[in-house]
Image (cartoon, rainbow, N blue to C red):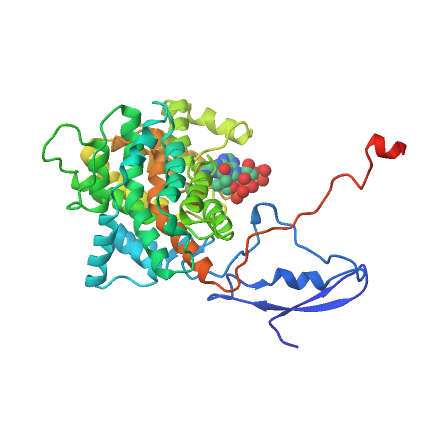
Length: 435
Ligand code: CMC
């Protein structure tokens, strides 16, 4: 018998089935059976067939993907085969974004053209400003970002040409180009400051920093340490295979909705405190703890399950999050300019106590990417509300690459999960029962 198969005996009927097993690049990581193969397992002819039950899709592969590889047990993250450590050390965010989308690092001429396209699409239609002006002064910037990205759909009806690769590429340039502008406008709106137009002479992150923080200076220059630190943070956040927000992008995109509304859905998923909203929650938690001597008490509350230790734990990383290590180095460089953020001492103490504690060891809870990113962002003067927005900007390329891959994949269909119905059996209203 073919070794790459699974034999199943249905003890309800005694029937036996042989189901093929297929693997991806790594047989140890990513062996699967086709869930449809279970449907032949029936107790009678009119039986629907067996399904698998998997709330939260903890063990369900929804696609074959060649973009990002994660080995959670070994703390490995690679984009298109390149280790995250190498990309963060040697490549800019825009080079990494090109790689994620196209599968190869850009040649110099390709990189120049990629830069040109992204920068030339950084401007927003002037009506977008009016739309953003309508938000209340204390509107959360993530709510503004989600709504504004969805509204872009109305400006670009050509985005509905999903099956035209040229049109798809144009939407990618637009979204990657405009996300920092929308993000900065959302912040400036909350501050009552005039919007700053993009400057194409600056790098992707340099321009974003300028649009955020420029006041009345004529020749505003972003700090090069902040510019590079943000660039590294953007590389680390660019993609993370099939997480909650990427799943939202693919799921909404699978109905052939345009990429603006699909990306708005992905950003909405990212906003949640268990996903990209976690870095905001980490800062709030560190403030709530207040000082190093209160850390032990807080850990007790975590162990009593009164609160979660934000910035700890991950669905896939059960050893350590490789992004958290790189971020710690970036933190040192930023604090070299800003001085040490006092919250860092509380964070380090939390990490020290948690990593030695049985509860955290048993549950395999380690600091994730969000544990230190918020402390760096705060040192760079980004307000806490902007943290999930700072996650959404670089993740845009990941969402778009995954969306592009999905549309080109002939095996993909509109996302439509099954359910196991546990509600009432067929019944009648009082009136019809009386007839
Ligand atoms: N603090 C305390 N206990 C935790 C934590 C935590 N941060 N995370 C998980 N646990 C415990 C949980 O209580 C449960 O315990 P038990 O088995 O005794 O009931 C066990 O660990 C498994 O938890 P789970 O919620 O089933 O695990 P999950 O894989 O579904 O959740 C997670 C992953 C990231 C949602 C979760 O670890 C969490 O809520 N972390 C805090 C929020 C956070 O930092 N999120 C950012 C993730 S990284 C950025 C991104 O990619 O989105």
